[in-house]
Length: 182
Image (cartoon, rainbow, N blue to C red; front, side, top):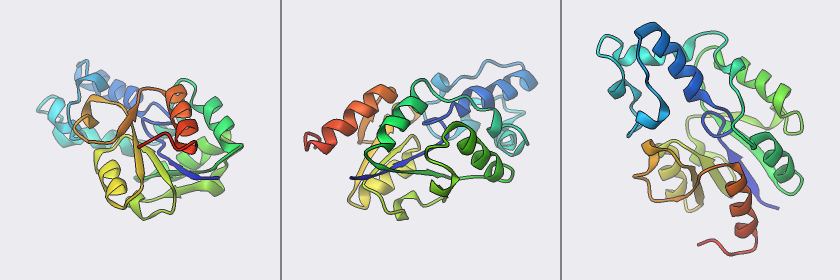
């Protein structure tokens, strides 16, 4: 049984749609995740917004309302029957409580007891990290373990294995367990 470390934002749940919709409403723009070619969101917003784009991440209610990505909950349920699952996520202000509530509501079979808040995911014990952030993917691979990217334009410059959805990740895990991954 392996331990799978799974990121929340933009891996389990759709942070970008909610985050960008708030920005788009306030700044009359049409930013989407497909516009981001690198991790620095401030490079893609109107000049008058700039780094204020990150202030939306501190708004109460943002994280509790996030929708799960397609098939995330079903696949996590199946994977949790054969693997230890730890949700590893970083957080800001209100998000700690909201993320815990989100996990309890949407992933009760994993539960908040398996939720770890950290900015150093490479320091958490686990066999595989499923994440989207370039810096997390790189650091985990450099620790000698396997990182898998949820594919987005902003992480394509990172040389790790990648999947495009949860069903593909489930198949990747099955193959990994059978020793078929590099």
